[in-house]
Structure formats: C-alpha cells, structure tokens
Length: 468
Image (cartoon, rainbow, N blue to C red; front, side, top):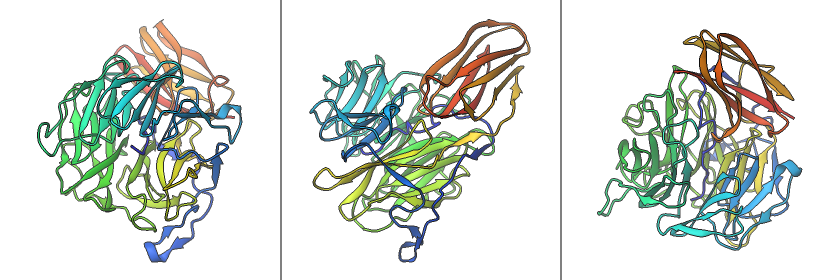
C-alpha cells in the first residue's frame, strides 16, 4: 500500500460551514501542451525537502503530537518537526514495515508488511505479529466521535480484517466473493461522520471496486461501484457537499492500465454519479511508471486533492463536480514516482517519492498551506446550542464561546485533521447562557483543528486555525 490514510483530512470530522482557502498555489504552472496542458514536475507549488536524507516512503502519516511517520523497506522511521525544519529521520527497527503505518496513541503503532500485520507497544523498537494475513495494503482507525470509534481495519488485495481491541488481535471480515476468484479487498478505508445519511458506515476501496460495512467492518457488501469493468479502487475520502450533507470521492482505475478516474456518491455508495463512468484524470509523462491514485485528501469543506502516482495533483472546490490540475510533485522522472501523500497538521501537503533502485526518493512538502479554514463568525444556533471561536485564525490562545438555551450535560473536545482527539476543554453540566472557554495553542502544532460540542442531543462543530 502506497498511500495514506486520508486518514487525511478533515476526513474525521466534516464541518457544516462555508469555507474559503487560506492559501493557494503561489507558483503559476507552466503548462505542457503535449500532455493535456498539465503542470510539469515541481510546478504549481513551492516545494521543500523534508528530512536529512531520502527514505523511499511507501506510506506517510502524522500522529496526534505532530510526529511524521514513514513506512519503508528499511524499517519504520519517524521525524519530529517540532525540533526544527527540515528535521532528521530516525530509523527505529530493521524490519520491513513497507506497506502502511498507523499510530494509535503514545508508543503504540500498527504496521503492514508483506502478508502480515504487526504491532509495537514501545514506539517501534520491537514488533509482534498480530494477524497472519492481509498486511500488504491499507490500515485505518475509525475516528473518535464516530460510531465504532477505535476499530482498526487492515486490508489486502483479497482480504479485509478488523480489530476491536486496539490491534491486539484481528478477525477476518466477510467480503463479497469470498471463496471464489473475485474476492474483495481494500487499499483504503473511510467512515461517514455523525450527521450523515449513513453515520458510521465504513467504505473500503480495492480490487473490483468499493464495498460498504454498517457493522464496524465485520461484514462488507457491494456498493454501486463494484464489478464495474475491471475497476481497481485505490483511494477514498469524504468531503462536505455544498448543498448540505457529505459526498464520497473514490479514485482508481477501470482497468489494469493507467486509466485513472474519480467517482462521487451522495447516498452512501448506492450510486456513483449519473452513469458510473467517472471523471478521467490525465497524467503527465513518463508513461508506465508509478501510475495509480495515491491520495484522496480532504482539505476542509467541499475541497479535496486527488494525488496521482506520476505526481500530478488535482483539486476540487465543489465536492468533485469539477477538477483542475493545480501542480505536480518535484523530481518525477522515469525511475522516480510518487508513492504516498498526506496533509499535515500544519495544513501543508506532504508527498513521498520512490525510485526503482537505490534509496534516493525524498519526502517533500508544499511551502503553502493547502487546507481551508472557516470564515470568522458565529456558528448558527442548533437546537439551542451556539458555538463561536475568536480570534480565528489565532496565535496563542483563542476563546471558545458556548451558548446554551437550557442547562445540559456538555462536552467540548478538540480534534486534529486526522480525526484524533487532542484536547477536552469542558466536560460536565453547564447552565443556560454563554460560557467562555480557553483553547491554548501552546501545546499544539500549527494547523487546522475541529472544535466539537455536544450538549444533550445537540451537536455543533467549527474549525480553528492555529498559527505560529
């Protein structure tokens, strides 16, 4: 598995707000008329090398502390950007965690390698096999606040397994085609958030298409995008729909070649666009190297990136109705392709490059912030619940103002862009009226965060951008 858990994204908590970009590409692409007017390598963004050396990152992901983790054939590696940029890669263990890596909390990691899934309880120093199967594709944790929160899923080309005990053990899921030749697997997963038409539904995209689960990953059934020609689903994400609700975006190939497309669904995967044909995404040269979709990355609101293996980056700001090639990863060449992509807590796009041969593939990031943030202003009152964050964006501490129409049991929690809870500002019974809470940014990295308030049956969310 070469992409990330888009697990990128405000994928974990969508916010029902009108959102605007913080920053867009600052370098105007010079188009390539020979290939559909696409950007050339390095165009569209200002790119910065990350780390002190190339590492051939097959998967990139951030933990709740802002540490960047990489899965490589040379072992799991980490880089702490809080110590300074560009940082230093630290190789933890000479074991090929080379498909995917997933931090589950302090010192707990899950990694996929070959045909097995492994777990470490000491920050990557030692690893034990927890599932003899799957292991060569995606890893995913259901975000906090979602139905089945904390479930962990692992995937392979013809298998899915789930864990209800923080990856201590896994059980093989029931999937379409089991026992036959066309068995569903998973390269990537996503969950539909609370408030959607199918809250908690897990969607898996892999060989033969997209499958869905409504029981936390124990059983999967066919979606409307299954057995569509030779569809090979690769990455999947969720964005806000401009008209309300949520839209699923899936990317992959309709055959074994590099015929790359994206599909959208507004009904939990039952139907995909008007005719299931998808929207073609042309790639740049060279042909035959590093093809595929390596990231469907939600950026906030209706915005998302689709990142392709030859480095081309497509953007939508209308939930997948239209797409524009806005840039391309640097150093793409005949033997060098993009293998992983993730949006960091600082709002930048990070990509990992791989070279067919020696370890010379660097991790790069955009100097520009690519996520979007909420316009300042009060959250509309929902069932007697009001929420406002001021100032926003903020350097230092922000004031979170909670307004209740009646006394209620309240929890105010903060989540990062990976959907993991990073702080609890309040928990308990509050009286009617306005209550001011302090969100201190000293212990959090710069980036976009979601503030979520529950008061009885009412829920309100908003985003806040912390600056440094």
